[in-house]
Image (cartoon, rainbow, N blue to C red; front, top):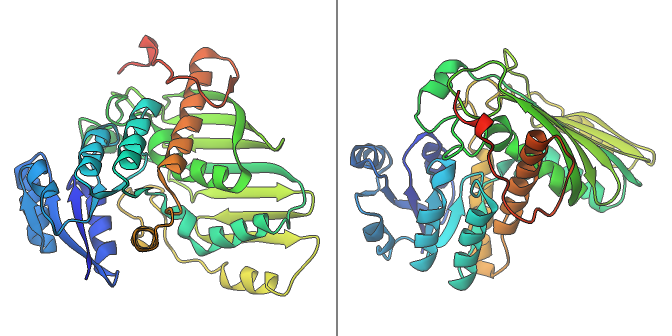
Length: 361
């Protein structure tokens, strides 16, 4: 019997979930809900599912096994908690939520109701990133020394003006870090391990009428002693492919978007040349560098497959709620450092308070 999915929030990102589910054998999109009834009706007509105008009614539908939360970032908690309380498994678009307190409410609800929780981080499922993770786990880098990631994207002013929630602390939860670069923040934590402390600087340099940052740099010290840099921006025209660089005493790997640019270790093995050859082919995918709709749904598809497998086997998803919380915590620490001008250590004891100077301009 197919695993039934219901989608909450019928904006742009819901289409990627719908396309991914079409490709998964044993999965079926059965329902949707949006607080704007017309949006739910339009989405349902396009995707052959049932539109609900009341969330509780959708959650009462026995055909719905999993609920995908695709609302604006700061509106994830309420429907996610409601879904968990209804006994549904939950998958939440990035970020899990915009504060640690709200992340914890989702995690706690899913734990209490014994349902699975996954946070959408599709970059972990790319072939190059999976090979890099394996190389780290095998100790091929020797001692990890540097972990850097760069998201130098471009967003027009029209992008921010197109939705009242965009560029606000209340619903976007942040700018280039929280909205765009969070995938790479997650990758860096996945590769390098927990973060010990951060130093950050942020600014709003290229856009008007937004509260949040469009440019930021941060230095990172990981708990294993390695250092790193995270750059995040939507102010760089025309928008460049995102890049991650991992280095150690015995190796360096550089991945741009989904392609291997550099793969070199002191001790070569039989797979290295194959990886360099097969994973260096340019796909032509810009990954949303200048257009947020120009991303592939392939990663979503693999992640939803992973969630379905975890439901059937009882194992935890590759990116669960706690993983989703980690990237939010790192970004909030960067924000706190940028606002206070001080180094911030992790774990955070509480959510940082947004200063009045960061309110909408």
